[in-house]
Image 1 (tube, rainbow, N blue to C red):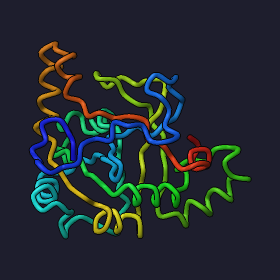
Image 2: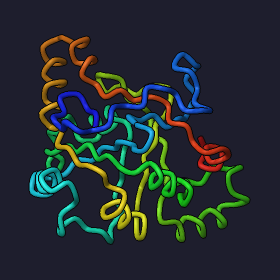
Image 3: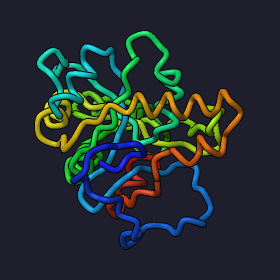
Image 4: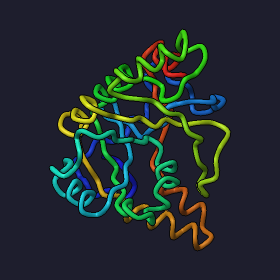
Length: 223
C-alpha cells in the first residue's frame, strides 16, 4: 500500500492515471464524492482500534480472531475524516490507526449492495421501502462533511461505508490485501500542525483522488 512513510517495499504505486469517467482534478467539487487513495486494483480505507486489535492486524496482515465479524464495522476512505473521528489517535479505543488496502472489486460489491443509512426523498418510493431495504442490505452508505487539515468541516461530503453480515466477513477474510499501522504517520502530521507547520503536514497526507463509481451507482447511493 502506498501511504506516506510506508515501509512495504513491494506495494503497488498509486494509480495516478485517472480511469475512464473520472473527473479531472480541477473539476468543481460536488456535494458528495468518493475520494480515496487507490490503485488499479485496490482502495485504501481507514479504521482506528485499540492497540491489541490494531497492532495484531498490522502484524499479521489480517484481522485477528477477536475482531467481531458479526458486528457492523465502518470504513472511511478519507484520512482526514478518520482523524476527526479518532482525534488524531488520541481517543480511547482508537489509539491505533490502520490503513487497510482492500480489493477494488470487493469495494464495488459493498457499494452495489449498500443502502443509504438515512432516508432521502427521491431515492426510495417511501420511507417504508427504504426501511425494508436497509434491513436486508449487508452494507450502508453515509455521507459526512469532509474535513480540512485542521479537522474543520468542509461544504462537501465524503463516504463512510458500514459493513455487516456477509460484507463484514468478506472485508475481513477475502477483500483485505494489506494492513498497515499508520499511527506513526498520524503523529508526525499532528506534530507538524502543533508546531505551526501546516504545509509540512499537508505533504504527508495520502494522495486521495476522486474514485470513479460504476455508471448509475452514485445516484442510487445519493451521490
